[in-house]
Length: 537
Image (cartoon, rainbow, N blue to C red):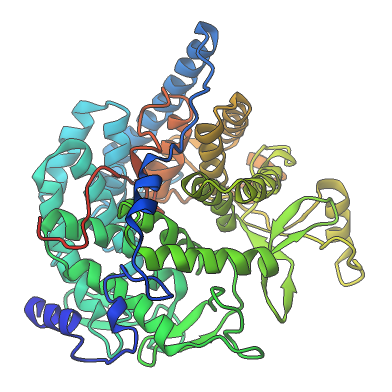
């Protein structure tokens, strides 16, 4: 199967695309390669600020805050180790081991780089031995969600390898990627959403069997690019890049159609035809990391993957025009929209975008992009800051400036008047996106107020979410613990939430943005690997 799939991807035997010359992503949308002088310029661009406060008093505050966060991470990790070590998750309320990601140990693998960064050497050694024992050919009997397998397992293993140089992580990442590559063996090369590693069959999580979504077909490019570099095997990169080939070849933007604005892609796609099916463009769940990986994979490639940059620029143009909207509170929000209009509803997933946009603004030296990123950060942070818990909701809505509020419920109008937005789904599951974006702004500007914002959120989390088994979710961020707790602690709590909390208070050169690119799951990958257009050396 591995050899057959390699032939399919390299020779394009199963599908003929007019964009075949773009197979590796080196050629841009207008048929040009990256110019060497531009690459040289980008390589010299500095992302992180050089103006961090260096007073002894501030350094002491940072150190104490980092220590507090590490102590709480250790407490949560010890609970996981005591009650669920090697399992996917621990229910923080019942202390039961939970299987959610095939039983391979999602929390174990997703946490590796955070443990290493925090200097928890004994815990890292113990976790390494546990990882060595994982057999990815066996699972819990349920199909694997290919996207989640990539970002949590493969990404976690690659980052652990780069930080520790222990080859067991690369060996396991390659073994799992080879299994997941089989999910790309479809008529178009767009992967199945779900893949059963034991039966070798694909499916969709819900809906038609061949349905997938934008994020879950466009969030392999970063990890697969790096895996091709490390293994010197182009098959992974080619598989991920073929997704772009199909999207661009099979879908032409046309006014009045489901895909009407260049670069603003609908959510749902059929993997057999490669055609978009439905789902208005947005930056939230189901779409988010597709856009994130355009700019980040370009950066990880040493600025050589010109097509990714061109696609990013095209998408940002559409986002500015149709997704971003000023609310009645004069803040700038991200909705759901295209040239057919805007739906003024959003979710916490969209809050990754201000940080990614700020990163792009520094890479591209685009001050206008940074200004927009800052405006979007303010509305994202406000969803946390305005709550009595200092914790924001899963979903929220806003009233576009100048719009009539007569279609809103009375409670929604009241919350808009009080907060500037209304809560649609008021629960919180320890998601990292707001913290992540604030972290980027802190590292990029050096402004201590952003670190203080993160500390404020952390105080809210400690006051409301701490339980014996780690950290629980909240049913209603307006009520905090009194509104009830949710017995859910996903692996991203260890991989992302705690990592961004901690790195906001370490010395800025710890996992510097000038040296690393973070995956969508918060796994840092080194920018220092050179890329000359091949994976042979």
